[in-house]
Image (cartoon, rainbow, N blue to C red; front, side, top):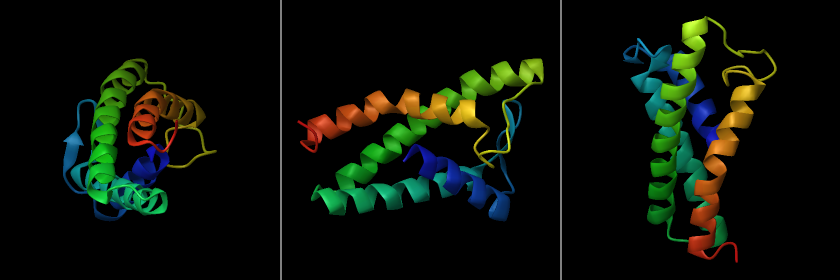
Length: 125
């Protein structure tokens, strides 16, 4: 779902992005991109809920919560640090994802919350 949030935000932001989300923190992020990221998270979460036989609304709500919490955390911490130095790991290996280090950081930060959700829902025992 972390990748889905980034992919959805990237493509929706590129296609429809007009209103800046937080121009001083991250000038490239848009409200439309954030909505696109959450939409793709909802689609992935809903598909996972159907696959595992879990309540769709609860799983989508959990995905939204983690997506919003995680995205806000990463935006504030990493973007402020990298903008201050004018250096960012924006490699070309993963276009639209901020580079390989950003991807590893994203998954590492979100993993404990998703594990909590999987254990509490009974998917993992």
